[in-house]
Length: 292
Image (cartoon, rainbow, N blue to C red; front, side, top):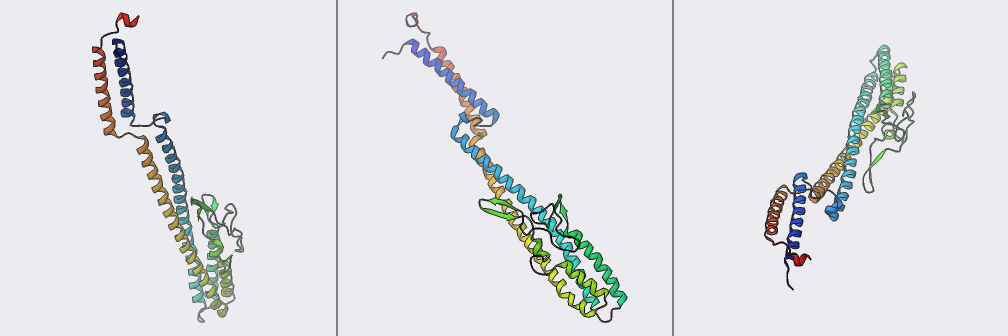
């Protein structure tokens, strides 16, 4: 088959057009730093990148809510620390008041301090964080304790999903800590001690020490559980952050251009276009016979 001047000219022209298109693409990649900006650039990479973006968003959300829950539990732990201090102080007063050498007036003064401690305990029990009662379980809009110290909250706790089928509690079990689900009610323990002190009843004062000690232990156990929950949530947040960061790196590998490679490709494309233009310039134009 004879290759005519017209065919050679067409091939040269097509070569220039193809190389010019390659140069435009190399310039786009070099200037934007993105190898894939739209699905048509690389359908497979674009699809995989969308998957990594979804994974990044899910993981980032898990990390955020887990870290927020850790902060809230830390605030709750601080509150429980104050509750523990109240009950420890009440136990100290009970031990002092049980001494037979303590006067009725001294016991009356101790009773007044116990009453003040009880009022403080009620305030702490009805603590709010960001507008929510922290010891109410799911009923975050309802105060968990009434004036008598009765528990009005729910035993079911708020949870967050940190992975497929894995949920972690973001609240402590106030029913366990304050004796609503069995154990000792600290309000009752304080009421009993105050009554015994006002009655100047040494035996009753001594008998109240057991309930106060039980309350101190319940609160300590509650703080330990809260610490375990914080640890689990921090681990969940760390795992989610690792998944998020890996998704970001994976998406970058899929759609971002390597700076060195993109610069090299640009130089090559510029050289190829110059060569194609030079070849086209040397091509003879189609003869009149071929054009006719």
